[in-house]
Length: 426
Ligand code: SF4
Image (tube, rainbow, N blue to C red):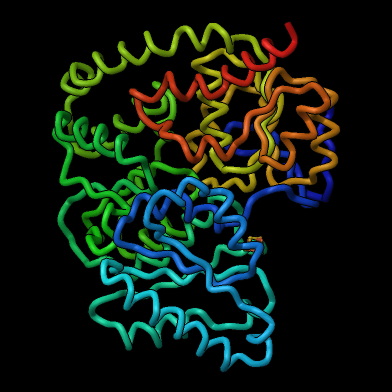
């Protein structure tokens, strides 16, 4: 099927000559507030205060419903009718909510004010509000701000905006250090730390840190190894602080994880022999775990709608390690700085789509009849009703999927919907 460019110059070539279909139309993606769901688990002394509407509160509560069993580390300051009367009122109201919160919760070391879409929130200057509150609560609490608005951010860009807001506050440091950039499940972070230790790579810091008050240093000696492909702004801000980027594929799948560690090993001058000896046992174990799932996925057709920004590395894993056939790989945006290495590993002829025009994309998807479609929640139900098998992309962001020990779990996330569908059709 031919690509249908929707604007002039909409098909451009990347370094490996893969055509990219650029689309700008109606989008079906979550907003950046969603990132709070995993970020609040990661930074245990931080609090995320969304300045927003009831819709924002509902999104967070339904996306993070499990939190009702734990002490919440996020909330919504809902701007109501009364606040529309004037900005002065809205600022006073915000200060009052923050006062209440911080007097009740002395464990909070960092407070993120998170902006949203409603026009009354857009009019509020949250950067100024953060500055004002910082003067009041310094040094006990640091107040930062970023936007999670659906107008400015998609799904995972919320994490980028959050981490980017932390960069100016990172202490300086010129020592040779590795900074892993991107939120990882604690279990994955622990595994990675052990492997870096065994390889002889260090000191290693993680951004975000487990405690928002334990900020990693950044400076001329800092090498950045990026763990999530959606951190464009954060990486650029860190580069401006003097850090150097180690371009690499992402630690998704066995091949991606090996390439990721290899990149760091080369930067630290680790011998190939020591590298191979260290990783071989873990790689062999991961291969054994992956094989039963790869058998199910081999030869199946995959269609990915743009949503999480993880699509390109996941497509590379599913094609090269699980033998899936890529029909279309959609992604919200392509940042060549962070995705160039991954795109080079995609099979020749892969159809890449950047941005979205959802109706056109649905037509292409229906015409291709893929075995599995990865998409957001809003598209999954209608496609399932049409007899198609879907995988919710949001689950990929909420699950621990990075690294060797998670490879089988990652593949299983794709075999599960296929098995569910085959049970339904028996
Ligand atoms: S899209 Fe806008 S209004 Fe809706 S939940 Fe996200 S920030 Fe709130």
